[in-house]
Image (cartoon, rainbow, N blue to C red; front, side, top):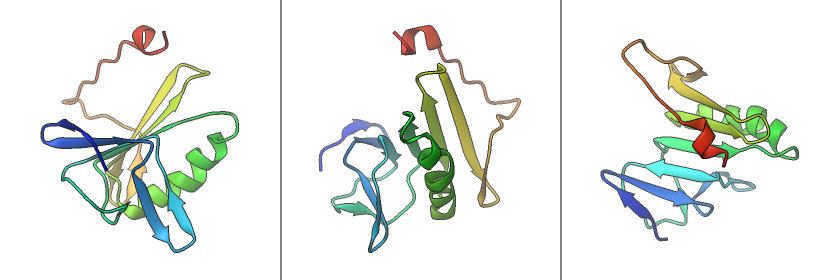
Length: 116
């Protein structure tokens, strides 16, 4: 498994999988973890998971995967909706995802650059 190293994080695109159960394997669009792994499946929560919506995956990403990532303890879950040019950022608080940013936290995204 190769990764792009962004100190002290490791990003995995399209091939980092979570084995939730024997018959349930999730493969996010992008995963950021804080330690290297040589396993084929992650067995610990990632720092951040990104899913990109499409008409065929929107319901699954917003409901099924949302609930699974929440239970699995993923710290941040980002949903990208390219059709609406929107990004939703959820953070795990008290074992549930919330859609808020603290007053001390500022994130500036130049969306016009993302959607080009």
